[in-house]
Image (cartoon, rainbow, N blue to C red):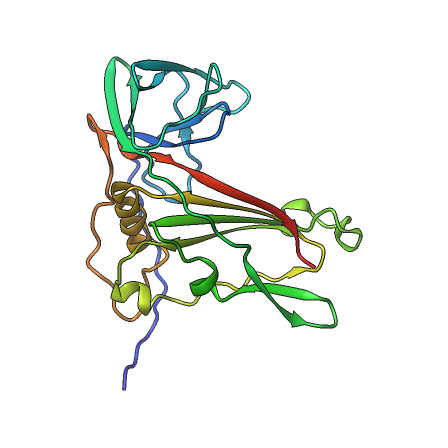
Length: 261
């Protein structure tokens, strides 16, 4: 028999500014303006990210270099000056220069296999509310992969008078080809319910071995923490050199857009 207790306490945060750059980016195999997000680390996890607005950013592969420009309407976000497509089985490199210091990272894009639409189950016949079910069968892949599911029902007549943010949800699912006791006995996830007629945007990302390790180490420190068998806290994996944190990824993707019927 296992017993436990809970105790509330006030957490004291340090006001010391660590001033470590955080680099976040996923280059895809789509012909689009690719994106890099830069910010500074913060001591308070609930504080808003402080954007880096004066960096030099470039991505290179196959002897081509693509420069990025700061998006002043979205501080901390850098968009490629021209659209470009990431190439499978080629090392893709990023270089970020902040205050004269260079930070670099490399990832290899692997192919993405086909996937199917998410499975839904009707859980409330009165309001026609659904939830995603069977993640083990829906979100299975021959390669390590991540799914991002955006669900939006803000445009339905019954929800027009509600705040739009309360009528949207983003869900993440992973197939990392690992077996962690923290994952098996992870805390329960919130069940997201949404009505019939909701629109779904589903994206599958292929994950390189390094990218999968980053996602696994991040989950061990966040979503898989708080269960029966927590692991010792550790450092989240990063492929960024030079002293920055975060991860630079290169992923091939496949997408679905559909409506829950």
